[in-house]
Amino acid sequence: MRQALRTADQIGEALRRARKAQGLTQGDLSARTNLRVATISSLENGEPGTRLATLLSVLAALELELQLEPRAGGADPEDIF
Image 1 (cartoon, rainbow, N blue to C red):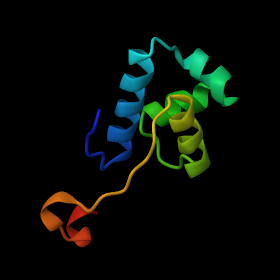
Image 2 (tube, helix red, strand yellow):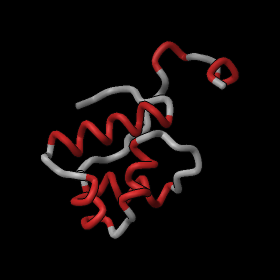
Image 3 (cartoon, rainbow, N blue to C red):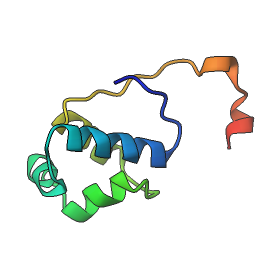
Image 4 (cartoon, rainbow, N blue to C red):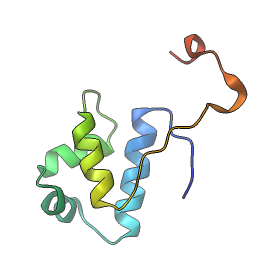
């Protein structure tokens, strides 16, 4: 499952899909990560302010990893935000 994720909403949706594909509930993921269900929900909903440590914990629990690659098309970062 390779896809470019550029927004918090896209990251949250990708995490939700990965969790569901593994047959896990938010409660299951909460138990694996020692995070509150509300925290998992906030992350999946693309809420701003999610800590990097939280994201990394969820990625590890879902056996996913974060990879950085140059942006396709060489967009100017000023055009993104």
